[in-house]
Image 1 (cartoon, rainbow, N blue to C red):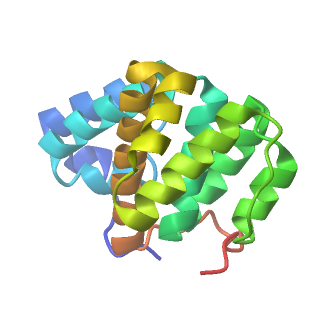
Image 2: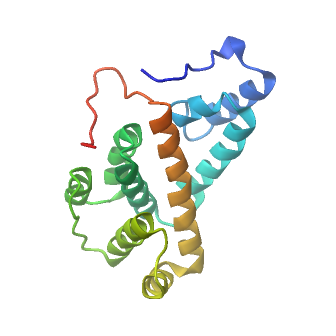
Image 3: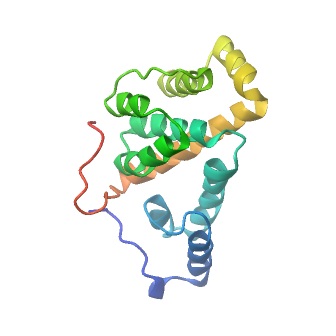
Length: 183
């Protein structure tokens, strides 16, 4: 059970209703997970969900690479809900099932595509060392372009916020679902 209750629509302020309507009418379709937590702080929810819409749907990265970055983030933080929600999306976007399973199990995935290997290396290095060296940065720019590297860092940062929110507020998986990650 989550540590914080959803805000019932009947109890929402005008700002909360406006934000909920915006989220529900967009590609997400529902106020769930971290968005439901953030509804307790409407200004945060409004700004964060707009950043999230960019990170998930509008960045310069192909969806396959964004979803891979999201899974690396979920694995790093042990964010069960994030993994549960995004693993099927990542596979549908083209992330190889074997790589998803290796990540889920805490192993080292093997990628055939150089951009996937680079995103994995970049994300895991950034999370492990809190930076990337000049060589990795240069390879990332060569593969993704400067805008792509900026967007990749944005995706990683946004989903780190998501992961922290999910973990701190103990956001539950749907009823009957087992945690996918061993943490």
